[in-house]
Structures are given as C-alpha cells and as structure tokens.
Amino acid sequence: MDLIKIADSLYEAEKSVLQIDTISSRYPEMTADDAYAIQLMNVEKELAKGRKLVGMKIGLTSRAMQNLIGVNIPDYGHLTDAMLLLEGQPCKVEELNQPKVEGELAFCLKKSLKGPGLTIADVYDATDYVVPAIEIVDSRIKDWQIKLVDTIADNGSSARFVVGSCMMPIHNVDMRLTGMNMEKNGELVNSGTTAEVWGNPAAAVAWLGNALSVYGIELKAGSIVLAGALTQALPAQAGDCFTASFCGLGSVTVKFV
Image 1 (cartoon, helix red, strand yellow):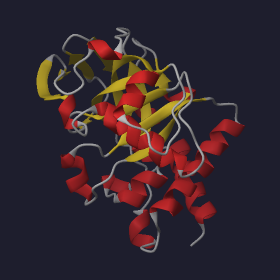
Image 2 (spheres, one colour; image 1 turned 90 degrees about the vertical axis):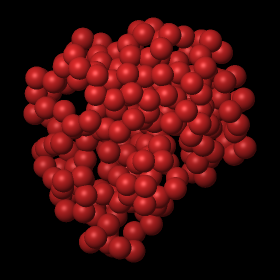
Image 3 (tube, one colour; image 1 turned 60 degrees about the vertical axis):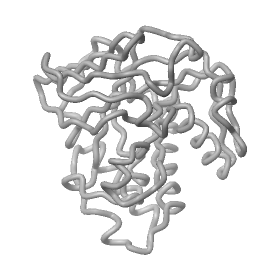
Image 4 (spheres, one colour; image 1 turned 30 degrees about the vertical axis):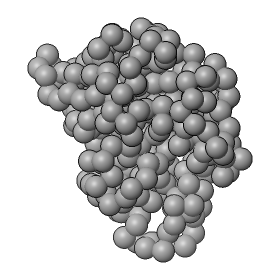
C-alpha cells in the first residue's frame, strides 16, 4: 500500500474536481493512522504553497452519522485560509464535487489546548467566543461511498466553511440546549440542538485536543474549531441558499452559485 500514491490521487481529485473509487475497498488493510498520515501529506502540500492553517473541523460527532458508516468515534480534518468563505461570499459549485451543508458551532480559541487529559472545563477556559457556522462538506470519493478511513484520508470530507459575525462568550451559551434551525431557500428543512454533538460540543473539542496529542499537535490560540454538525448534511447545488439560525447566537448564510 503506497500512502504517497493514495495521497496524490486524492489531492489531484480535489484540484481537478474529480471523484475516485472508494479507498477502503481497494485497501482493506488501511488503518485510521494510515489515513491520518495521508491527510497530513496533503495538508503539508497546501502549506508549502503558502496556505495558512486556521483551525480544525470535527466530524462524525452525531450518532446518526456514526451509525451511517459504522463507527463510534469522531474524526477530524484541517482548515486552511483557502477554505474560509466570508459572510456574503458565494460558494462556487464548479469548484466542488458533491457538496453538502451542515450547521454547527465554531469555537474561537484564546488559549492553546494540548492533550492528553483535556476536559470540557479546559475547553471553556480556552475559548474566547463561539459563533454560528456552516460547513460545506464534500467528498472526492465517488457517490459519498465512504467508510472511516476514506473520510479521514480525504481531510474529513471538508471543503469550505463560513462563520457568523455574532461572537458570544461561551459562558453565555447553553451548550447542551441551544437550538438550531436550518433553512434552504427560505424553507425550514431541519432543526436540532447542540446536545446532538456529544451532549455538549465542548466535549467534542476536548476529544479533538486529546486525539491530536497522540501526534504531538496542539490546538493553537487563535484557531477556529468546527465542533460538528447538529443535523444531517443537506445536498447543495447552484442557486441554493442556506441559513443556519441558532437561538441567542444569530445566524449565518451561504449562497451557492
């Protein structure tokens, strides 16, 4: 199994807006550690091009998504400045394969977090504020036919993200019971609460800090952490407009063109 070759195929698929066959079916021996190694190879390619790492995303935090691909743990991916869309900036469908939209909370850190042993209390202490966010996930794997190692290798199936402008101190937010409504083209399409994310999204952030410590990586002060989707991902196409509204936290909108 040639990890470099697999990484190159994923990188080319992203840049050329192509889909490749499911990695896990071709390499059933691949482990999560192998997949994270592939992910990091492609992140390093972006950094070598001058991109900046601005944060991390956590995926597979809800029971529904874990059941979908048969796992019981989350995964993570890296966020670069090239993936950030400013509010009002459209998302170009032509740059993506098969985009989907997720509503979640973004944690903006004022202190670094380094595991092991991180707790929810550590996350609260390190967080400057939280904001509503939309993550646009995408898969370079054909027809979203993914298992855990596929999405890990593919940088957590990440693509773009938008953060809202309402910056709320974390202690002013009920991290278990804050509700979210997702609208598509002006119509309510789903809703959920922050409890869907491990009972408390801060628990997912603590998990991430501890998971990264295995590789000697810390969540740096100033980082953005997308804590995981509250509801199922919704497919998007050109012309669609999505708004995620959080109770007491305002909203964030993205338009696809």
